[in-house]
Image (cartoon, rainbow, N blue to C red):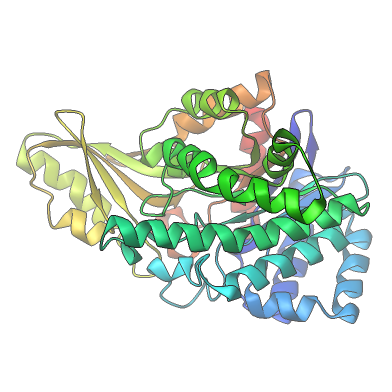
Length: 403
């Protein structure tokens, strides 16, 4: 829905189904009920997630036309998409495979270009669109040596330029402005603003400026750089940046200082807790974390040490195995919890980061797209589960209140 400071939606990656018929059935089931509770009198925006199989099926003219007709009948529109998870995201073990295929793969390129063609057909006239994607790939697939990491990054970046070319061609031929929104996360090839900015200026622009100049007969380096900055932007997932202990104001200020844009704000919260020095009291905290140790998604933990440095655990079991580490005084875990709650027994959430970032958006909007992304409803502890449309509506209405 349109707010005074941008479009707001939720990401439909919370709904099961990997083919288009299943996806569409879930949209028909939940979207009207959510719209009625959140945006009964104005058009409702959708943050669409399509698995690769569904994207192939929705590319067929008859399916796309039927979806366009349904959107019109339901007074809905699509302005953003989630192109991070390529394959199965429900009822399978996802873990690090959420990054597969990564940006070194031709399959990732083809999938992303296909999503943008679908988005171009769905966007309301005059509206920009964005698709979030993974941060090149998963760091632990490429940690043998610096040379491997550099080659990996170069290949992934060059592949991304193929998508960039299509976005520029679409816009220059009269189509909508669309941007690929890179989503850093713990253990991704980019985890924070420093790594994103370094990649942008050390890899993307040096490769992209001559590429764009050649493809579009542009003489000026700055013009080519500005084109790239319009079409490749940041997806600021509040949960992910809270996990790396990076404050919202710092993220936004650094992006603005470097002249880089934020294409999408994903509104999500992580779990956190102070780690008491007393081991019996600490066990109460770690036992609470154990209740969130489910087998489907990655739940990276970043622990803050007494000296201000950090320990990165690739998943919650590795952190739990080190629960008595006396050098640690805080844990933050990548488990998306409902944004409208700030306490979970002895655990807390990073909700305060959400409040801060929404206050900054309210004061001086830095993005046109906002999307709630609590995708863990199916795997939450039973006490936190509600009927899906009620949960999503409660999140969106809470966000509207903050705005």
